[in-house]
Image (cartoon, rainbow, N blue to C red):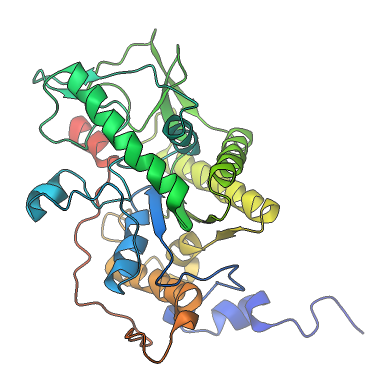
Length: 352
């Protein structure tokens, strides 16, 4: 008797792909749509986990595209002020709506209404990247001027990147009721004051996220016809939920929506790919060993596994005898991972 599963490759069968495979050798990547070469300018944005990809590829001397680099600054000051964390100093972009609005602003099709938020110390911050300047700004005009300079770099990132890597992080967000502006943190957390009359909470639905993601992809392809996009979903749980329910339930909802939206984009656009870092880190095959003691932060072992798969499929086949890149089964880098910067941590700081 024949059946549709007869002769299926190992990766399609749970026992042969998971149960009978040593955990550190599980590799869910199948048929990547494109490769990353040393000559490709790749850019990154998204939630905290996106920083791992840029760090590992940079360690291999690939072309991490950082228009807003701040190389004229002392290294300690540069790190403190968020240079090099992503391709530009936009901090964490947690929701797809944030990403879409940033692109529209960068190409001159949208102007945010919010100008600046005042901190308790009297200094000002950019509402859309409130933690990017630790010492704050002296005036609202300083915020506006700094943002104009920043947006010019963001425009370069979108227009000149060969590969854009985006990590979808959250569905929960905070918005201006008047303008629709979307913020990475609620007003009052890192600056400004929250007002029920002015601000609102939103938990984006699958329809919202899918529409925003498709709109972003259509627009970036319009302004940068040769770009390829690689999507991932952050495996980091929510640090807090604004819904009146358990944070675990909100986390599961958020990640499910983001994963489905990423799949829809993958199915719709042949130049969009999905890398399953979420599945590698959260998969039950690793028995929860890829998280730190808080069960939220991803540990080095988990990052190593995800990036080993990434490099094997998206980078390794680019290897030439003379390219100077050394590949081994268990990839280790002498450069420490360092701390991953996450704006969401500010919520815990102001609520504990």
